[in-house]
Image 1 (tube, rainbow, N blue to C red):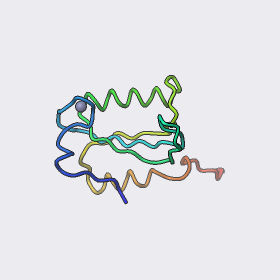
Image 2: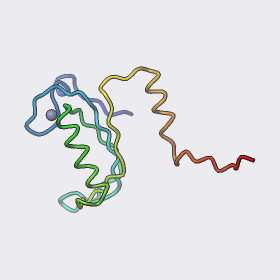
Image 3: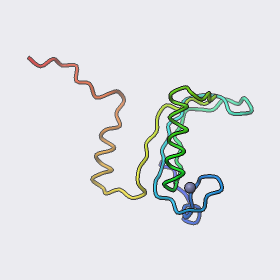
Image 4: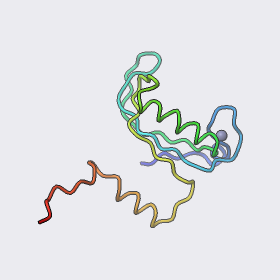
Length: 110
Ligand SMILES: [Zn+2]
């Protein structure tokens, strides 16, 4: 079941102290870890609706965590930045690319 938000919550950016209109959705995939209180946190997906400025700042922050330049107790495994609206065809194409392993064809071509 996909994450959804109330319409009134989706009218402004989820960035802190920001009330601009969201232009993007940032989907993040986090691994298992521990929260600030030391409680175990399961692997999961997070979604934030963000304005352009906050989306760029958030992607830069998450890339630092992925690059291990910034320590996080909850490992960031991946992220995807998308516009708020997609066509059905774009959704279909994106879905097709999210597979269990990298798209490497192991059959040799001779
Ligand atoms: Zn913002």
